[in-house]
Structures are given as structure tokens and as C-alpha cells.
Length: 164
Image: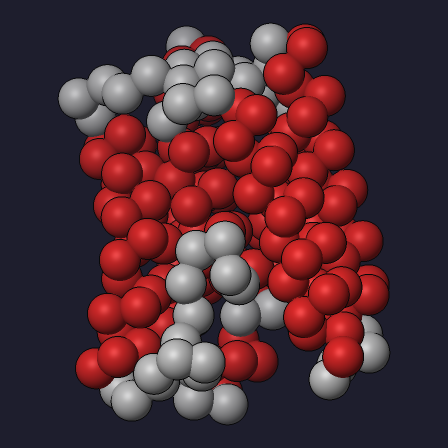
């Protein structure tokens, strides 16, 4: 996985989804766009600093990371379809922020070295905000909340274990 892909997806979501599409009907989307663009820039700077690199290992972190990535690509649209959220109400990767955040936690669980924790701030905040759409019936976002909470805890646990 090249970190540039994460950068592009976050920038795309911020510019195309939040500004061009969503801001027409939801003015606060401009603030969301800013967060996604900032995160995209953070990932972009990681390209040159080698702060993030990925490797699959046979451990719980990598397996859960792959599960989150799979959920972001297939779980969101499948669960949406099963509960009646068909296009355009369906949520899918690159077309909506939430699957992008789930995928991000998946890749962060695949990192093979310590990375600066400020990289987690925006994805974690977005995952916590998933409570609101779940309350509105977007049950697919239960995976967003789970990825954010479980992913963040496991990243800190993995680093604590690897310190010793």
C-alpha cells in the first residue's frame, strides 16, 4: 500500500464529496471538507517523511486491519442494500467519508512501525461522530464507530507491547 493512495482518497472525499456534492444541501459540509483536506495533506507529507509504512503480519492487528478494509469496500454497500439503503442513499468507499475513515483505520493497523499519533485525531473524531448517523438509521456506521474505537485502542496497545 502506498501512502499516496490514502492522501488522494482523503483529498477526493474532502473536495468532491464534501464541497462539490454535499455542501449543496448541508452547509456545515465545508467544515468537514476542511478536516478531510487537512488529513489528506497529513498523509501527503508522510510520503516524504517515511512516517508510515505498511506490512501484513500474521497477527490480530493485520487481520483486523484487513477486515476493516474489506468492510469499507464491501460491508458498507452490502449492509446498506440489506437494510434498504439503495443508491443514492447507499454509502460506499470514495463516495462518502465514513467508509474512507474505516479503511484508514484498517491501513493504520497494518503499519509496521510507530507513527505520530496526531495522524489519528481526525479519523478518530469522525468515527465518534458516527453515533449521529447511527441514531438516524444509518446502521452501516456501526462499523465506523467500531473501527475508530477498536482501531485506536489496538494501535496504542500494539505500541505499548512493542516497547518492551
